[in-house]
Amino acid sequence: MSQCRRFEEWLDRGTENGFAELETHAAACGPCREELELWNRISQAAPSLRKRWESPGLWVRIEKSIHESRRADEASRGRKESRAWWPLLAAAALFLVAMIGLRVFRPSLGERELLTSRSFSKPLLTEDALSDVEKSEERYVASIERLSRLAEPKLRQPSTPLLISYREKLLLLDTAIAELRSQLDQNRFNTHLRKELLAAYQEKQHTLEQVVKEEKS
Amino acid sequence: MRVRARGGEESLVETGDSASVREPEAELLEGARRGEVSAFERLFQTHGARMKSLAANLLGTPSEAEDAVQETFLKIYRAAASFRGSATLSTWAYRVLVNTCYDLLRRRARRPESPVSSVEPPVDFGSAPATDHPLRVDLAASLAALDSRRRAAFVLFEVEGFSHREVGDILGVPEGTSRSLVFEARRELQRRLLGSREARA
Image (cartoon, rainbow over the protein chains, first blue to last red):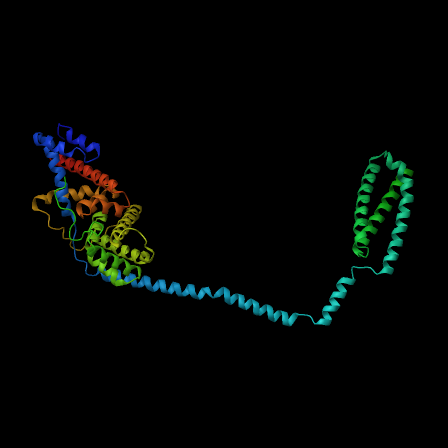
């Protein structure tokens, strides 16, 4: 390395600014002149790094790869186009199957009327049946009222944990009965609701009987 | 500072202002967009030799350079229809080539054990002056040690004679960055050449 640091400093600056001053300096400074000559020779020698050689088969290779790529693209496009019909075909097939199914399995008018009458008449009570059920409920209510009067002193001040739990149960049953009665006010012929209400009455009657027995024991 | 004339017979149209130069590039681009193979053949005839040289200086061997050029043409064929860049077709082709070379270098770095083909076609290194011949050998060795970005900038500007504007377009950097990259490459080469000279002395 040279003793003079001027050229190195110029290099470290990282830009070509100040090159004219450096050239002036190098005219009188041997080491810097040497470095400057090398600097210029890099540019002079650089074009000698151009590499030129014949490649007679290269374009043929490129052309072949382009044609192969084109064929692959066309094949891919063809597959995509054929695939584009698939959802439409599937929908058409589904529609056809649905239409055949409707034709084969669709019930006749008579069958439909029968189905309708069955499905709607079954869960509903007739007026006579309803009257019988309501009488039965009245009997339960009367029985429950009698039992309630008997059980009332014990339930008001329960002395055992069992009686406390009976009282809780009766409260729940009263809530359920009130709910069912409210629903039945809107649909008096509903068999399911009537059954539920009857079951609730039965359970309340049974629970009150247990309370009365408990009181006696 | 630069003593040699810039831009050879293969100068890109970006620097040429005449309509006669721009027009064939526009026609070439239209043909390429339509997928005409003849357009790519014209591009190869005009720029193929320079592209091979650039790739050989970046990759080191002529066979790899030819592979890179082939891959580049395939890439630009596939993407030409959707090319909407402001650059010319040739500038774009060089950009794709440089990126392809970077990819190949990265792939090579991942497979360091893969041997380089020993069968290479004869290479004509051009007509360098006899006095420069020793420096050319050292320069080539020093150049191979540079990082790929600075090497690409140096090869494009100093070896292949592109302008800084063209180098910037090809590397996807501003013109000023191209100047910086070339300067840094020359500085690195200068230090390496001085180092090897002193080691010999």
